[in-house]
Length: 196
Image (cartoon, rainbow, N blue to C red):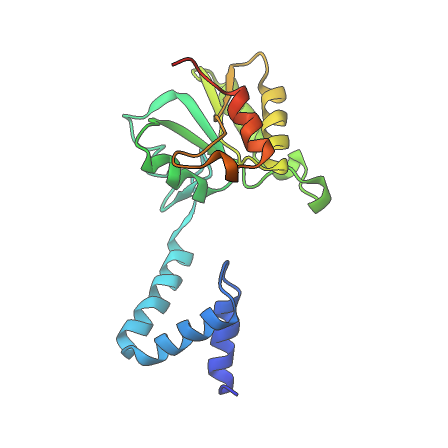
């Protein structure tokens, strides 16, 4: 129904996470409606990000150069490392303005079913950072999923005796209702309760 070039654009947009066929079509029609300069500006931004953005040589977060902004910031607390699965996990933690340490991006989570073993993640690099000294605490902030929990447990085992290893608390969200929470979430909230 669409011309081949428009169909190709829809197909490529559909490959983006969270974008289905209808959304891809809406985006394609939008790109056809805007000025050529605006559409080409988007294409240039995609080309530029692919050419200029890589991984930090220390923490493996996104960087435009050898080091990311966090690792190159001398004001950051180098005694704390927050371990996350992907570079996108750094963003919500930074938005809180509560953490002033460094990060370490594993590049995923352990998942034997999907063929992701410890050797596929940047765990060896994390151990080397901790072994170099000065790290007093590693905060494991992997996702509260089966694979995230398995990864957290593995990281804690590998780092045992080298430094203090903590895990982000999990439980009920602020503004959430008990009646809508699942049993695992309520169980974690009970286990992580604190005195008032």
